[in-house]
Image (cartoon, rainbow, N blue to C red):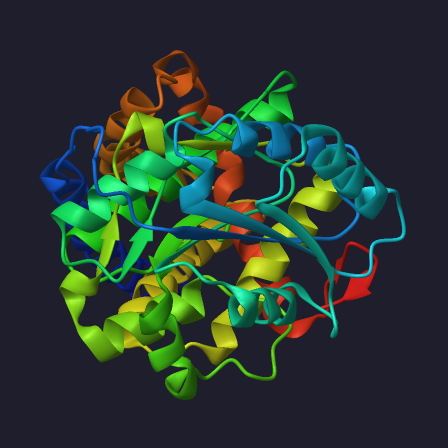
Length: 380
């Protein structure tokens, strides 16, 4: 009887968390549909962009990125590319320099990082940048031809100081890669929806742009100086706090999509997610911390129900009921995001993903908060 009493309180707490989760995802869903799709016009007065790329051991992918930058429908006189090599121990530097020489890409520059870590590399590049606007991406990404033009349009049409933009995992072939894509679609939907309602919670350094002067202005307000990573969300948090909700926008446009590869195996997948989670301890904004706690709390409840069902079979029924509720809450936003990315054919994977998602969230959440993560040969 005493155990039943504890279970009643546990299920009541789960009901509260489920209600908060419903409100949270409901707001993000409403926000996604509020996003305006600006047409990509051929502007006559094009601003100058500095594209910053911090790379480490990207020899296999970097040439694809450089080619997509060279093929931008944007005058070469109106943008520069600064590649900062973060102490690669493969042929990354050689490939970049050969590409610059062979294509006579004089607006491309390769420099060596003075310090260690992506954030330090980007700060070094920012100190050399001449553009009014800064665009950042990663060494394993591929850009669409109107990517830079889309940023120029959105900066002109909005009051944004920082633009978040869509990222798509491609190509996907294995079941693990397809599951990653479906999960990532939900993250993109939440990123866009949260920004639309004025409470941005996520950003992806693979695809974002910001006003250079604004980034320099908020530098003294950032709280992440001791961290080697986290160049994206901490900057977003600082700009929103300093300039207000309208300063951070999400660019919902096909031309702005950046493609990057999913993680090839479970080990690298968990290492990536734990690295993301590890930065949560340093966030200061309630708009970021509270949603993360709601998501973690609800998924932890589902995880515990699944665990308790081994010893108390009746809890399996509650697990199925709450899991079904979670799927119903997630589906509208996930469907909208999958439609935007033309990935609706993979929505059938929502159901198997739902069963493993609470387990993955708890493992990566606890691991990221309490253990050091190894990424590209370094401890983060």
